[in-house]
Image (cartoon, rainbow, N blue to C red; front, side):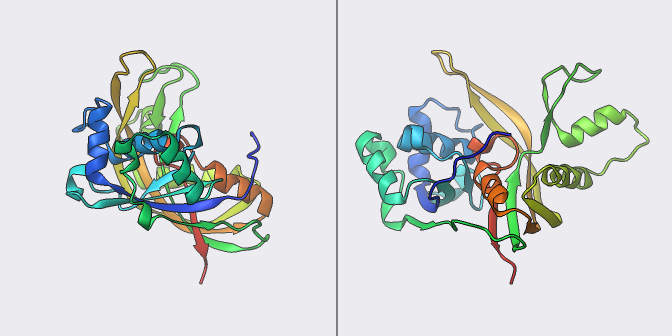
Length: 258
């Protein structure tokens, strides 16, 4: 597992103009009827901050489509080694005027995250994840290297119509196994808060930059955890959990247990 170099980290909250996001999508020739909010936000952050764009972000109130906002602002949270003033200077220097105006800079807020997490600390958490598995070999319904919903993978492997497989239980088993592999934290409790099938967009790296639309599971978990090793937990927090982290998945949001 690669080590994450921790510096001073800030949690930043930004409000993005939904109409300007749509305008950016048009500028990038995206099929807006098929593209989800997460991908538009991913594009906006990349255009705003280039190499300094956040590796983890969370689109709040994300069950709505971009057309449902009707000009309202979209709240985005992310971790960054830069404070918001530094990020604004980056955007001022290198982003186009259209992209720069996506952010309501007067409402941006940030705070420094803790520099250490004491062992034994109990926290509540929420995380939006994409529970998928990459198949290690060819099978009757999948190809080697194919990325598959963990629930669908279990159904295919079982291959028995008489066996009832519970989707929510399967996702919970996935997140429990993930935390069991982490040295810095113990998962005390977990439940599925929300589930949907998310349309995800991918642009290839060829000159025409065509967009492919794929579907993946979108599962938000909540629960409680206890820190076993503060340094290891810190690295997990800023590394994120699971796949597709740069598209709005994997950001672990935490608060104290009251």
